[in-house]
Image 1 (spheres, rainbow, N blue to C red):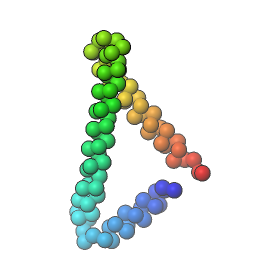
Image 2 (tube, one colour):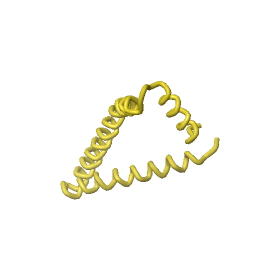
Image 3 (cartoon, helix red, strand yellow):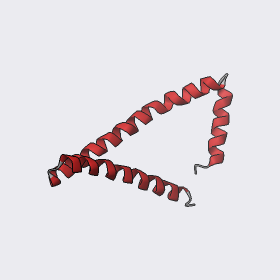
Image 4 (spheres, rainbow, N blue to C red):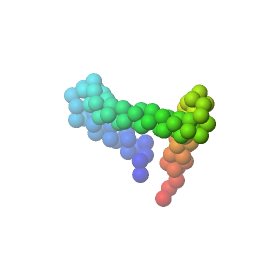
Length: 91
């Protein structure tokens, strides 16, 4: 189970492996950069797909773009809430 304590212990372990904090921060940033780019790219793709479907149905580009943006913004919020709820479940 991923707990705050586990994360803290992991960070302390990582910290002890590097000579200084700047080196650790650079290493973490380098590991997360591809994930961040992949996440942003996927969200853009999701907006485009939703907007294209909305355009096919509505034949209105402005409304389709609004639907694409709003639908994906709402989905991100719902997903965050869903993950937070599941993080509290003890299986």
